[in-house]
Length: 186
Image 1 (cartoon, rainbow, N blue to C red):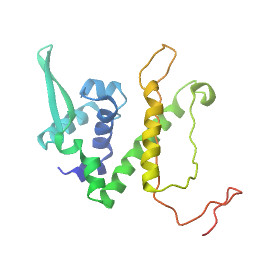
Image 2 (cartoon, rainbow, N blue to C red):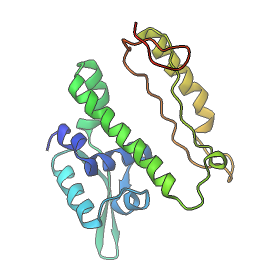
Image 3 (cartoon, rainbow, N blue to C red):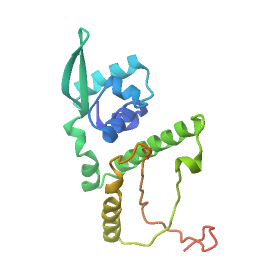
């Protein structure tokens, strides 16, 4: 099993993304967190991913005569994002983004199917804002955004709901935005 196998497979990718968001997890916790994989398939994937070194077992607990394993992203994948960027591996970068977009879409789809969902009340929103920046300015902007988000990364009230904040800086465009909101050419 290769890294490409994990990124190109939506079930394996959803397991990895759940762990990326929540940290080490048991199979039961993954199912509770909405990893939408049949239980038998999940256990088979976890076993295969563990054997391939994609997942590490970080603890084992005896539960009613069986051993429950807690998994986390294997060492070979922990720095994967950084390796892709460092090596300028554009093919893997595109696949990684595909997985990111797939999981983000899944969150929106789950929300839209939820009974009683209310866009305004629930605080859901998304937007695209064109900006002009150098690579250095984008790096600085991401650091500033992270600083702004720190106070919101821990629950301080029972009325707070968990939201996902996603930020994407696209590669530079060859097309200039039209002030009227229509695409133009440069």
